[in-house]
Image: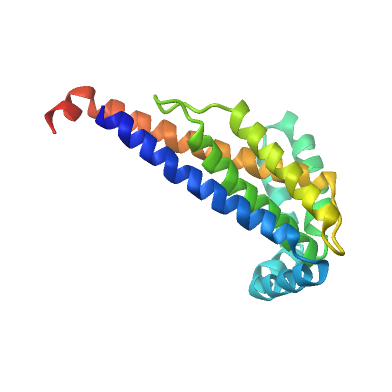
Length: 194
């Protein structure tokens, strides 16, 4: 009985965190384009060392070396992926990287929280419900931008949002699996003795 009450309390806390995260995401989408651009510029200043490193070409060298470390048959695929990342991500202007990283990280947090909210009572992760919730949130986010002054809505952003939410879901699954494993190691009788 105490465990069920703890799970309900935990889910209520997670639900509040989800609501706050959605308010943050959608609140940023309501901002006019000039305000959003100023926020991006401030983040660019904060992240200048990282952005300079990305623009230096060194990440491409690292990606090429990683591709060379793959087994022989996978190396061409690794080099194609590294080239795609260089052309479509690493060589983009800093403001693009900052805006897309913001989308990715916001939805990574949302996916993590959604996975915790919809996890089964035994700690296993559901996939469909959290991802469907994140997809709905991403579509609402882009819909808000359609009506925000000097903002645009892009399907690419929905894809980035879903990538972030999937990463968050995977992180939650790893955490919950580790916690289930630790509980299994402790054994059910240790819970009775306390």
